[in-house]
Figure 1 (tube, rainbow, N blue to C red):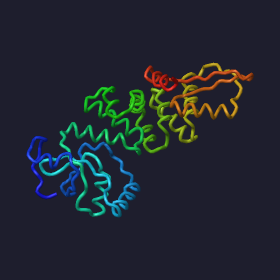
Figure 2 (cartoon, rainbow, N blue to C red):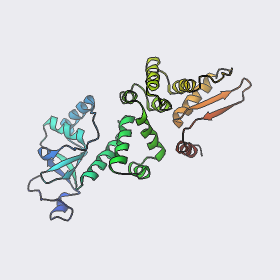
Figure 3 (cartoon, helix red, strand yellow):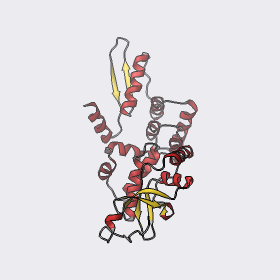
Figure 4 (tube, helix red, strand yellow):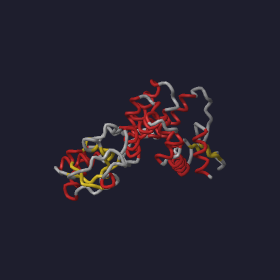
Length: 276
């Protein structure tokens, strides 16, 4: 864009022509966001985007802030990178004014709302919003549109041993496995269970059962009849839908009970709302 006004605040002359508008901005005038929380960019996904941009151009504008020397990227780094690879000279951009704290908050919130994030990356973004923007969990809940119980579940994953966290990021185990492992405070024991999950391809329910047996090794074992296949499938669906451990106990004469496990008052409130 030629002859751009020297805009530093919304009250400056010419701000209305620049800020809040979608413009074609010279790619060479855009610097990447120093607060970018995202560290992993899937090469295959980026290659697919490059092919799309080469054919259709950039459909969804990126978001930038105006600086004294040009622009700084707030969100849309994959689109920005793809445009550079294709060799475009300009890119459609929505222009904003923002200070460093606002830049960080917008980048983190935009990052959290992506669909391809792993659970640890979400947890780290939540923690940065709490620590660096000084938000409470209640304020964070409103910012990202998630209930506090969900946010708390993600944050608890950061208590896991770093190797276990890496396993979640790499897709070796699920968030459900991670939440089960958190019950073990000893990091060496966490790693031992993690290795057993990977080696044995254990389900979340099997992992929870294994951890219970470790925490209560001397508990007397009762002879209970094996659950029929339909009950086992129902138990697994209940656990997946509620995102907690669920047990179904059934006697030989058909009587039984369903046990829903929870590990905090917050989680109990989340379950109560679902069941009501």
